[in-house]
Length: 341
Image (cartoon, rainbow, N blue to C red; front, side, top):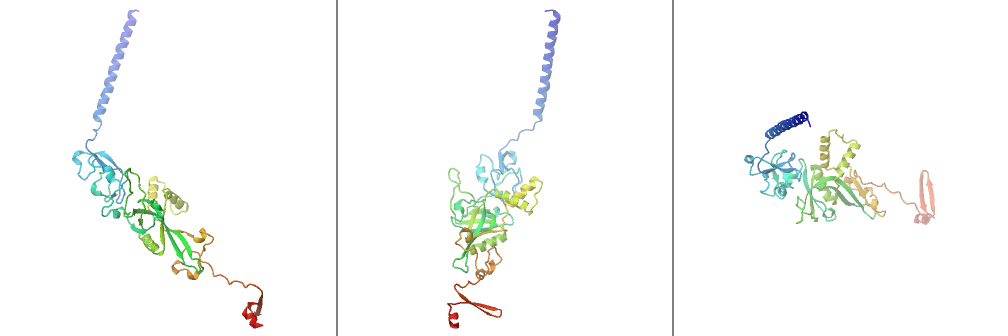
């Protein structure tokens, strides 16, 4: 190999080494500068903060809070600090007494625990009322109704009729009522394994508007009340029905549509009631009642009223007597016909 080729190879190696050193210094300086400019990770205890805005009356769920590092100098004794107490188990199921903004630490004074004084009043939606009804194990869906569920209210009553059998009727008077408590319990009862226990109860507290609360009070005096558990998907179906009927206009904004869904989901409905009578269940039960036996308060209700029945036609041979425009029909074997002979 000649000297010229050796010199070219040596020059190429030297040039490659210079490029490698230059590149290393450039990227190394940029990395050190990025590390120097990066903000320092916050250090301090982990404090429980709200992940979203929590208005007054909100029932805290597992998605409403998280732990976040907080400056040690700004930590207050009222904060929930990780490691010092089981905050997650303590906070879940409580009700917000004072509004909490997103990212703000959750304080112990801003929450009300189940069983504390004023818990039910804080859990009520503004403008709503709490009303309690008595139910049996059969009327309460065998204990499968829990606080927070949505139910329909059914009224069963017996109306005296003109015949031998009274009219038996059941109607859905109110739909989409929120269950606040069962037998003074505002949360679900769990066993040692964390599984929800199904227990029967005799009283249910419901959330209703002032007018609907009056209707429920009257309904308890009229007949027997029963609960009908609603599906979670019924809220979406109710919105689609109202949009199709033109009762509401669906907004184009997804956030506004979500707010509408939440509003409909929390609104009890006492219009368009549905009714079922004994005649709809069995052909041996009457469909209606005589007009004279219908109470005046029910004359404008959904109960159908039958027309007066026509007199039954006489059986056997008859005698027709016409006196001008007056026509009378008399059976031959009657006492009147015998006397006429």
